[in-house]
Image 1 (tube, rainbow, N blue to C red):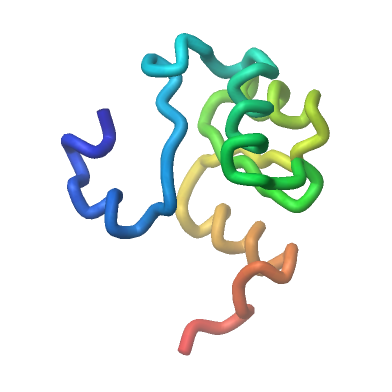
Image 2: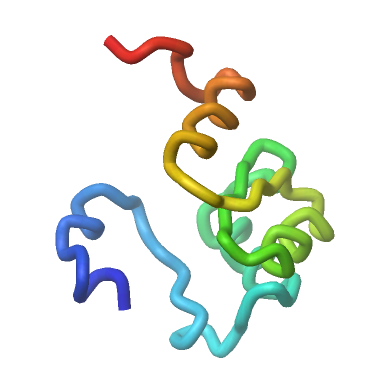
Length: 90
């Protein structure tokens, strides 16, 4: 699990949904819908990144904007284009 490899994640995140714990798996809609309910999120106001095309399509199928992760620079450019990050780093 990511927490074992990256212990600081617990400090950075408000919570997680772990597919193995929930007995749900991407790209099935139920795991995306559970995440939205658990954190009180609107799918249209989220952005889902994943390195697997099927998982990206699964998120899109429930109305969540999604992008295929290929590298950090491309992800940053996507976030800048959506206005979620400033264009220039300070």
